[in-house]
Amino acid sequence: MYSQRNIIVITFILISFFIWYNWQKINNYVNISKYVKYKNITKNNFKQINLYSNRKIIVKTDKFLLFINPNGGNIDKVQLINYSETLHSKKLFTLLSNHSDFIYQVNSGIFQKNNNFKKSFISPNFFTNKFYFQLEKYKNILKVPLFFLKNNILYVKVFIFKKNNFSINIEHEFFNNSKKPIEIGMFGEIKQSVNIPQKYLDKKNSLSMKAFRGIAYSTEKYKFKKHTFNDVLENKNININSNQGWIAMLQQYFVSAWILPKNKNNIIYTKKIDNNTVGINFKSSTNIILPKHKQILSSTLWIGPEIQEQMSKIAPYLDFTVDYGILWFLSKPLFKLLNLLYKLIGNWGIAIIIITLIVRIIMYPLSRTQYITIAKMRILQPKIQKIKEQYSNNKHLLSQEIIKLYKKEKLNPLGGCFPFIIQMPIFLALYYMLINSVELRHAPFIFWIKDLSSQDPYYILPIVMGFTMYFIQKTSKNTYDDPIQKNIMNIIPFFFSLFFLWFPSGLVLYYIISNIVTIVQQQLIYSKYK
Image 1 (cartoon, helix red, strand yellow):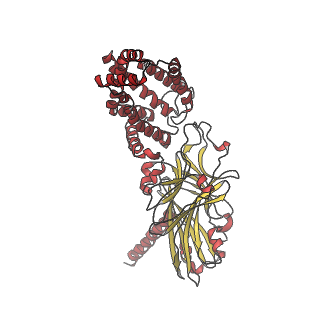
Image 2 (tube, rainbow, N blue to C red):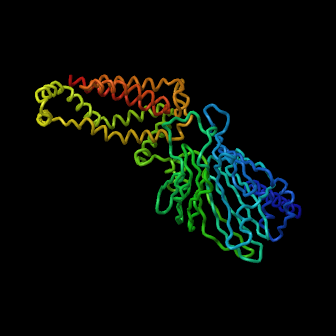
């Protein structure tokens, strides 16, 4: 009987040890139990840990390759695993960096109110016993803890990474083992150089793709608000309070954003750091930590591509950082339709073709009105010409007779322009949707088109588009008395082709398909009015 009892006890001890060991492994804390028991913390506990305090801490997940600087515990550099710097390049795309000629960084930490050691807490020299952390394939979470100890106060800054996620949770854990209460708050900062050196620019970026680059934020009052870097350089700063929201820095395809702590009185403000560097910051309200107590403050950081579906789940209106401008209410549903088509087909180029056809079919009633008006105007040209010859010396009677002719034929000459004006917002919404969608970055189409976000390497698509425009021009048979006007209209397709040489292939493809639809619709309608 005693032997059975001993077996049960031994089995229980082994199971308990196994559970404890795996819990330690899952949470990725390094001997965290002794840190929680902060009564016995001394600097001697950290002699071995402090060996690596001067080295950059490298973190690798399925989305990121990060380099954390122990001095301050901030991210020095971020490279995105699934995005290359250029097409077919093996070099990862670098979003955050800290160079002498260009800075783009996100910082966070704790400030202490009315304390002599304020600077130490703002930029502490953290330590850890590992300089390389990796998210294993069989794990969903990776925790990277950094430690700082001073005056019997332990500050643990924990970076929490999740699989298949571009958001990073950052927890600031404070253990107050001193004899006095301390009052702390949390801050976050995003700063960037205004001018980008030429060597960091994508040389294939076209002149047409001037997506907004600057500062944005969201508060209880404003869903989405943006400011240019020049606003900050000219000291047109913001200083507002909000209990929720986010701050961000925008560029084409990618964004970095701090999600504000909820249920806190946060202050959002911008500042000019120097003549070439600006920043947007938040600072939360403070909390008092009594002696022998602890406090955890947390926030979320998004670093990565502007994937709307994922960002909308991180914070309300964070997906608005995909800046479609004033036509966002049209661009957003168009993108959702484009994304749905891609999921069904698996090719962004074909999805662009289909969405162009869908839009043109929906707008066909307007296009039909426009083409019928143009066709009737062509039929009336002989009569109009006779009126011009008859009343060439009397402009007043000339205009009256032409108006009478229009009324008799029940023709509104503006009918050809009005449908075109209505269609323009749709076309512009498609344009902004296509140039701001990161999904099209380095997305192949067919044959020589390997990247729908960059220009056609052989300029075939712009030339084809020029031919379609020229064909539309000729088949429209617009009547111009002035030979200069005729020559200008003939030259326009050439200039458009020249201009579109540097447009992204996806946009040129859209215009080609749209022009082909125009040609078909015109031929069908004009054939009835010959």
